[in-house]
Length: 95
Image 1 (spheres, rainbow, N blue to C red):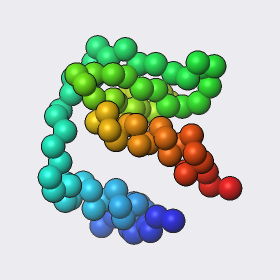
Image 2: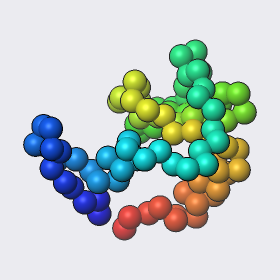
Image 3: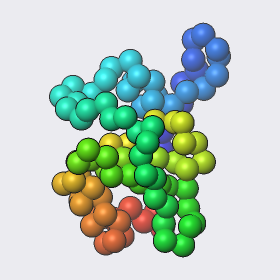
């Protein structure tokens, strides 16, 4: 479970992990800044769910379709393959 802390400026709660990432970018981050403005975003075949993916410049971008202007996750093909395999095997099931 994420820990919450009060934001000193606004007094609102913020996710500790989120604030840490904003203040301290990941060391060794070697993924390019991709131009996703013309990406061909795809949803699941049944059209359900909030996740969309796009294949751009040899990478896989994933975003929340309900918030398309929020940041996208960028995966290498190897990372995407590991993610999809884990999802198929139930690695991320919360029940």
